[in-house]
Length: 286
Ligand code: AMP
Figure 1 (cartoon, rainbow, N blue to C red):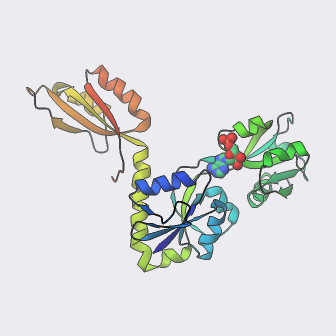
Figure 2 (figure 1 turned 60 degrees about the horizontal axis):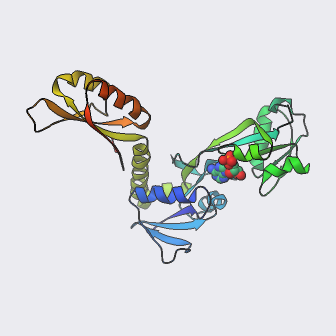
Figure 3 (figure 1 turned 60 degrees about the vertical axis):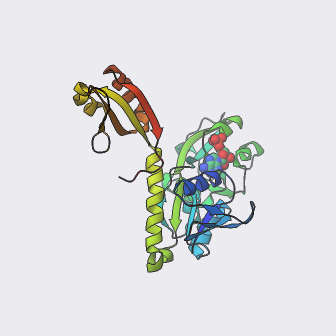
């Protein structure tokens, strides 16, 4: 069994579970609040705090883990990144009070910076060239400037609404983060696990790839096929299927980028396409 550490709660938990299920791995839990579950035939899921996952994987308590890049980098542990899972997108940002007009490079040396990410904060201000006093805290950094604990904070930002509500202004980015699939260097050296890891990565990749695509079908006149080919490039050109009519119409099928669906439909309509269908794709292996 390959042990995979998953976040037990928080922003990443639900998406991690959903991704694994969509890749075809079924969770089998004895109880809803159980801390372990079997996951398909080859994996065992361990539910732990997202913050602890880099340590658990690096120490060999788990073979794989899903957690945020922010936490992986903050841990400073040697982990192999197998895949960027694209969810849990956020940034580790520098923020000051709204009424503080200073930018990052204008902060004087000795400025106090409150954060739950002391290591990344230290490294960032070294790069900027300003020696700061990092004040490590365990949560809710947003309150620190108002309590006089620090002038500046470094915290995770997703929409930015928490900063705004707390009267703070973003002035710099320490790190862009998404969820990652990470592995211990040892598990990668094991011949026994290699095949299973490759299959897992391929399955997850196929789900992630499919997420950015849609399957589009439309009926078009046969004499417009040259234009259809231009509008629907597909993966290797559109698939053209006969429609059982007099031979005047064909069905054109193609995979299109999610962001291109709107424009593609308009272009198909302009050449008289009818019966346009757009569907989700579960997995895509080119
Ligand atoms: P927002 O108001 O959307 O900018 O979210 C900011 C709050 O959510 C802060 O308290 C962050 O610590 C937390 N947060 C945002 N994104 C993430 C993430 N991907 N992982 C963990 N915490 C996050």
